[in-house]
Image 1 (spheres, helix red, strand yellow):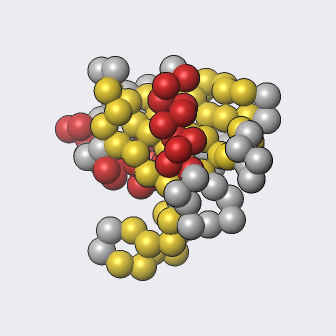
Image 2 (spheres, one colour; image 1 turned 180 degrees about the horizontal axis):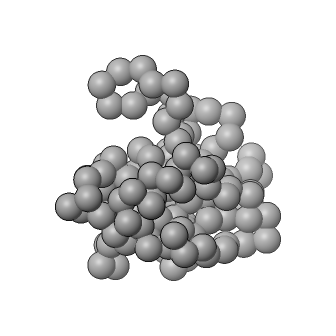
Image 3 (cartoon, one colour; image 1 turned 30 degrees about the vertical axis):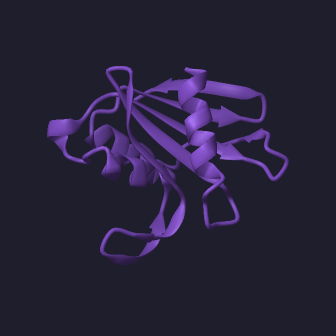
Length: 115
């Protein structure tokens, strides 16, 4: 579990935004999608591209490739984990794609919610 959280933290450090979030989609023990929060998405400008949605898109983003676990991490300027509970929009997308659980960062470590 820590390995994928570290991958999400590494992705978060590549974020272009003030709040550095990174996400990794894991299926069958393999990372299949990885992304950070960005201003741009595929096909040009988008109002908001959360790391969770971008990672799900990279992983396939269709019901035929659904399932798995999503790791989402926010990293502070000092490199420590910060609170990163998924927003309702991202949770809705996870439900649509049948993500089984989400492991997210808190100020105290990692927490898991079943979707």
